[in-house]
Image 1: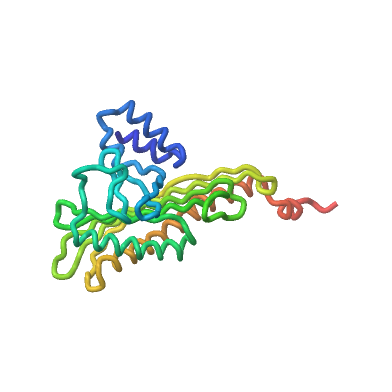
Image 2: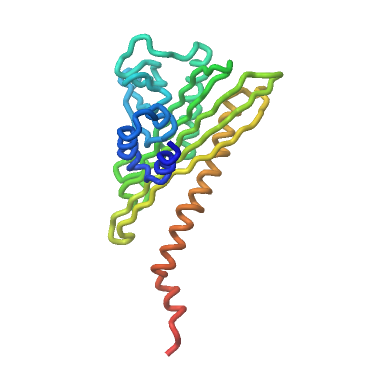
Length: 256
């Protein structure tokens, strides 16, 4: 299992589904652990009742159906499927509305979904998802990208309240894929994923949604910086070493 997880951490996001399927065939006894621990690129489905798209993941799935955060119904329909409590559902609806504003301001489009459910420790768990398609055919076309995707998964475990203080544990994963294919920049593919965790105790005087929002905003900033340094920074260093810019080559040429 440890070797399988190490392999999945090194697989490009766009090949995750194929690699996971192969591992499930090789390690059927670890199927539940693999499905729960391996993050896959997010898929999208349209809720015909509300006319809005929502994100599919393990956290809104039961059997082969997925619950929409907009209508609170499963697609395809499923009898006796789990539902959040009325109080938690009210918080979930509010979170989806607020997170959609956050998504538009930071990502200038894309799709977001928030799911919540009770846990066994008298608290609850919230999952915040964002999918941004940056390809030429997507909402967020950027420059020379032939294909581009940003998938963000934020899972927050919220503990029981004790004297107006609550423990929040956040696990965040970002999967990035970028591909170019044109004359000016050539063909290039860059993809990878990164995961980080943080835990903090906060007062609930401002509400759970405010606390979770601040944590996600801070974590996304750290993840973007890490991706910039690890992927873009190292890639730029390697490319400039192997194929230095023309200006640099001219500076190094001896005078004749």
